[in-house]
Length: 223
Image (tube, rainbow, N blue to C red; front, side, top):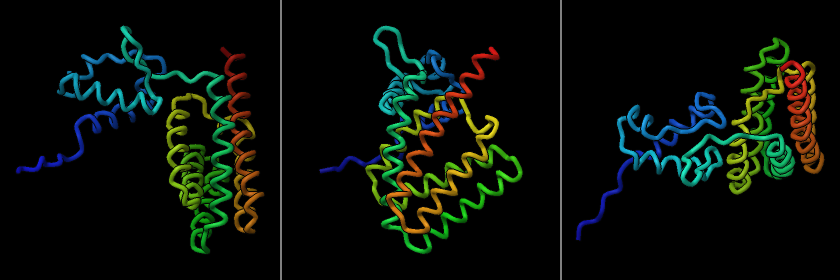
């Protein structure tokens, strides 16, 4: 009996990743209708792997499949942000709690090194570098938690948050505020206070939502 050979990464997975990156780059903007025929022609593929790719993105919340209307890039509303951030605060707070319990000396040293990137970027006013170090800092704490279920849910929610065009770090005073919040999180973790690290991380996420709301209000006034 001949066994079916396992193929390398399926074509639809590669297509899904390409579309995912175009969505994150806002090349495919929130609310945009996905022209399946045009994309299939661009990628030189049939509609079948493209539709499978879109199903993957729909399961991640990045696109919406609407009966008889087609596929659209998901739009993130203020209500969505209000719903997501408290959930993220709880989940990432729990990550910080579990990370304190599991982190070894070398792990904390690695976290301190990432935090130094935040300090350096803040001193130089390099917002993009600060943003990247911020992402790295949060990801490290999530990994240190050792809880793959928490990590999976957080990663899915962060994908959805990438759909938002708002970037609060350019808001006056937010960079320093965020840095102070990261300092407090790190201090709690280094002192081994899991409960405090959880609170600091929880409050940090909610503070980020408040900053986005202030930026949104400013944009509305200037529009």
